[in-house]
Image 1 (cartoon, rainbow, N blue to C red):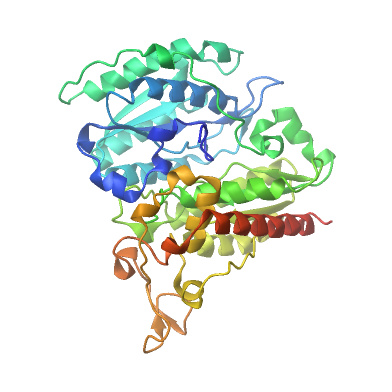
Image 2 (tube, rainbow, N blue to C red):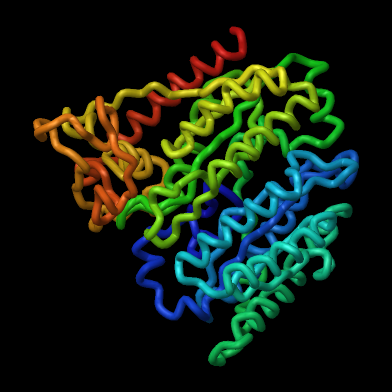
Amino acid sequence: MGMTWLADAEPETFWAHHAWTDFAALPRKEYAIVVLPLHGFASHGADRPLDIEELLGASLLRQAVERVKRHFVVRVLPPLRFAPAAKNGGFFGLDPETAHDLVAEIAAGVKAAGFHKLVFFNTSPFNEPFVASAAMDARAGLNLRTYVIHARSLGLDPGRDNAGEVAPFASHLAELLAEIRQHLAPPVASPAIDPSVLHVPPPAIFPAYRSRYLPALSSAQLTALPAKKRPLVIVPTASIEQHGPHLPVGVDAILGQALLSAALAKLPSDFPVFVAPSLTYGKSIEHHGFPGTISISTRTLRRLGLAMAGQLRDVGIRRLAFLNTHGGNSAVLTSLLHEIPESLGINATLLRHGCQPDVSVQEAAWGFHADEWETALLLACAPELVRMDKAVCEYPARLGDPGELRPENAVATFAWMTRDISRCGVMGDPTRATEEKGRRWLSNAADNLSSKIRSLAGE
């Protein structure tokens, strides 16, 4: 896969592509580098998309990581696209308190995975003070070694067309990452610049539905949207969490993007539906103890949802739908469906695909995480991220078990942590998954989603 579903990132070093067991087994994590890219959405010119910072910064980071990945361990987190927005020309921003909580919770997940060095790679000139504060908070509060690199200090300017100049900046960034690796650590050989990676091929279009992606618009195009038709805006919500030893921690986010891309491809090009920036990190506290899981709190997820809805309202959007692919988010989002209309005066709903896969009765009842469904879908859309040789069957309950107390879907339930009901993180039987099943289920789910999108948009 030359391009991840979640960002323009170097695939081998992308955090979301690794299973929790990879994080657990990684040696010398205290000397590895974790990079958190921070991008803003802002107007850098009348003809520039709002995500120009990410377009340039992600390409720069990807090329730098290509240069150093053979010399030391580096892991790049899914980008954080939400920070305090610029007063003038900023979009999809957060209040400072929520932004700081969000970064702190991501940093806590990095610490819990056993890493000691976190690099903040920031592409937003407006957010430089915020990033400096967040780095100090993580240093003092979590005892992480934190480092800050601003794209602007490398000479990258989103306000001018310097995409062709990324390679020289990438060499400089690679040297800085190598210096950070050496800081307070046993020395390693300095990475030589490999000529084969001086000109890294450009990624595929990101995201695949870019023509419907709100940050791909200029500020003028975004504010003009309500003057056309009153479109439906979809907000993808997901998580970065363990999915057993055979699937990567980015499963929920990747499958959400795959389902959405397939559904939108079935709609006419002029159909009035757009997609907001995804809420990639979710509420995954139940998976605490499995390295690689990054969980945000109920409070932070709620504020993220409210901030997104409020900004959409401010540009004239009156209908939004959350497409959620992580069960741990459901309770928070359900509450938001009541809060958003009352506090912001816009319609909000949950968008469900409604596909019922043809699985066994046992799997239908107790397969709900890293199971046959999720494994088959990932085999269909990103097979290189699936390791079927590591797939195991493990159920949290069995049909016919005595009593009525169950972890889910019963008269009496109990609050559970994954370790309470699964040894390896699997809840279901992924060993029965096949690519053929995944393709069929993905197609059926996309058909259902496209029909529901049509219905919500009033056609």
